[in-house]
Length: 84
Image 1 (cartoon, one colour):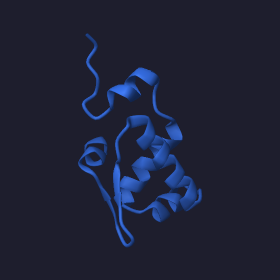
Image 2 (cartoon, helix red, strand yellow; image 1 turned 180 degrees about the vertical axis):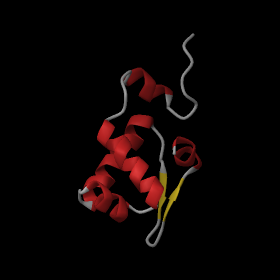
Image 3 (spheres, rainbow, N blue to C red; image 1 turned 45 degrees about the horizontal axis):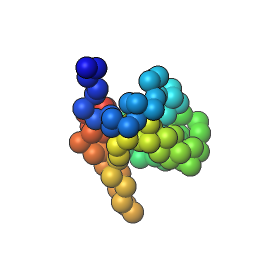
Image 4 (cartoon, helix red, strand yellow; image 1 turned 90 degrees about the vertical axis):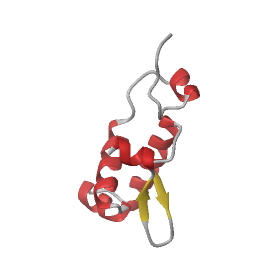
């Protein structure tokens, strides 16, 4: 029986057997480093909305939330911190 990564949902694993989108991974790395979508966007020369969309795409791919979003702060979830 094939083992799956503990943070990737079984449904996600069955539906997708390829690597996550590279731009989504880059967006996650920058956002995790800065704990800010705005600063990540500036670093990658894209809009804040583009970063948000890429993060959402990666979270859907993995089947898990990577960030806790509040009005004034952005924090990594445990899963997000493990990926960082």
